[in-house]
Each structure stands twice: as structure tokens, then as C-alpha cells.
Length: 121
Figure 1 (cartoon, one colour):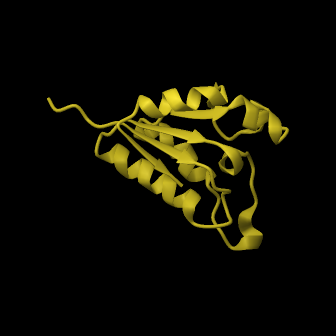
Figure 2: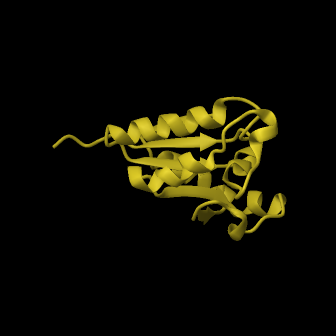
């Protein structure tokens, strides 16, 4: 059996300012279809993608929550955020649309090294 290459997708873009957030989730789901182990890291403005009950209707955009809720069905369960980013925007894990794993900012380098490929959006 051939080992599948693991991929880390780093999300650092706000959810509705551009198409980067939706594209990153599309890539994650596509990689998973090909049975690649996928991990997601949300940092900086990317953390805003995970906030519960967003209302992007005024921007004529679709919510990300539906795609986020599909991640476990695609075996994408390694979702990381940094404690520092969560605290800096004044949120708690209860404000997020899904369960996450909290890591320290200085653990990001190690997370990157654990994966074969890294994509940043």
C-alpha cells in the first residue's frame, strides 16, 4: 500500500473578504476525497472563519458553516487554532462552529514539519 502524502492547509484569510477561505475548504475536501490526510490550521484573520452564526447575507455570500460541518464526514478532524489568536480576538471555544485543538503559536513550526505539503490561503 502506498502511503498518502499528508497536507496542512493554513487559513489566514477572513471568511468573506475574498474567495480564499472558501477555496481552502474546497481544497481540503478534494484532498480528502483522494484519501490524503488533511489538517487545518486557522491563524490570524482565518480564525474568523470558525465563528458560529455568521450572517454574510448582506455581502451576498454563502455561510461557511455548511462546509465546516462537512469536514468530519470527509475524515478531516485535525483542526487547529492557536490559543493566542483566540484570546487576541476575545473569543472562547464556545464561540466556534466546531471542535478544535488548541496549540501554542510556537508549535506551528512543528505542525508544519509533520506534514508533507503545506498550502496557505
